[in-house]
Length: 142
Image (cartoon, rainbow, N blue to C red):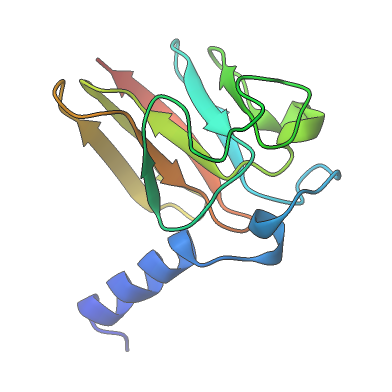
């Protein structure tokens, strides 16, 4: 039986471990990470990633094409009750943003619960989605 520390290490490795899907682009629904926004607010997502489990700033450093629904290396804001699954360039989402002064909560595919908070004095934080992971956002509170 896995101990708590071993289980936590395994869960962390699953979250931030690179995979072929998150390392590049894919053009088939379900081929990579995804985000489901189950709230009445908006959540920003990116279809690219550099390194590490988190990144900081208004835009992710990999977003060389800015906010663009029709490009790789870009980001988009998912509206209320929207999902990335229906957007061609976002079949493989690599991360979502937590605004300054906000908490974003939800659960990963498989049931692990998450909650990320940024104080008003901190810059926005991007949370990585590795491989085929799915982040189901259930609450955004600012």
